[in-house]
Image (cartoon, rainbow, N blue to C red; front, side, top):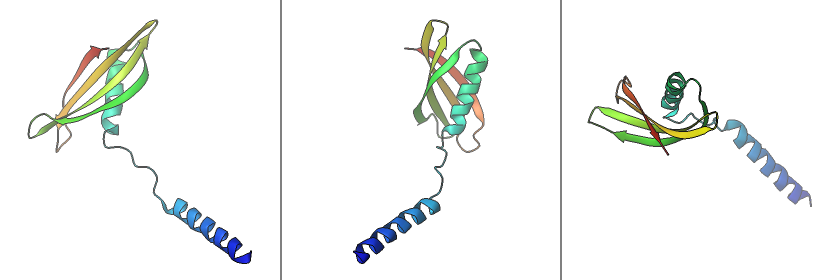
Length: 105
């Protein structure tokens, strides 16, 4: 019985030490672009509320530029629609080149 209690206690200590030493969840690499997409959407559609958010993905546009795409679900009164936000930027410097909005279903 004593050996079983020691084994349980050891397992508990091991799990606690792993929990304490594990780093906090890191922010995904697209988070910066998601915040920008939402900020620009709120400026362009000031009366609408953003009710949902999805990172669609990143694609390489040219050898030096990339594009992050987000799909936001907006609501204004009874109207609900989806909006694709495309953020094109220089891959190395992350300088924004263009932000395009595309209303979709």
